[in-house]
Image (cartoon, rainbow, N blue to C red; front, top):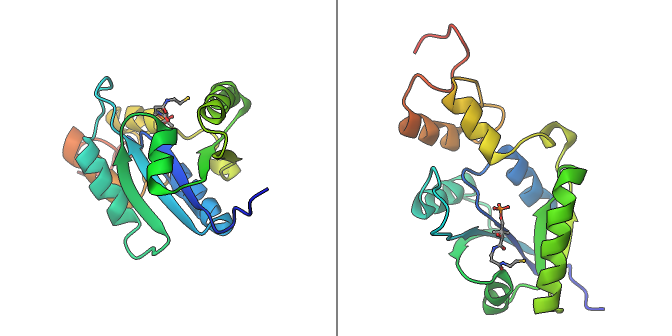
Length: 174
Ligand code: PNS
């Protein structure tokens, strides 16, 4: 078995937008691996809130100064991208059992495609176990507060997208 602690680990996803749950997984990844590469999937079939360029820029801003975190985009098969960048580990976050089935299928499919790449599942802090990009967008859009759930730069950008009246607790002045 190869030693993987020196590995470059890819943390792939849509990150539309990146949440504090994702940040938690990156931090955990850094405690195990040499470097974490956040890889944003370019998926023309999805209609995201943020363009790939916006997500790239935002995530770079969040991790500015973190020398062991890189941010990039990819399209096509994840294992091909992993090979291209020299990564031997894929990190995925598992929040609950409901995540597991799909993640398990993806991990085994990726292993079939390239057995040299190992998928590692990490659990975020319990306080993030209910957190998802989809819910953050919904709550924000309906006027709920998300400041504990996403980095400040993401909240600012969501306000730019949805308008200043969103994402504030009821009764707070705009
Ligand atoms: O944040 P998401 O949307 O759950 O991330 C899903 C992602 C990007 C990890 C997955 O869709 C992916 O790896 N897509 C790339 C295409 C690919 O390799 N498909 C086969 C994997 S089984």
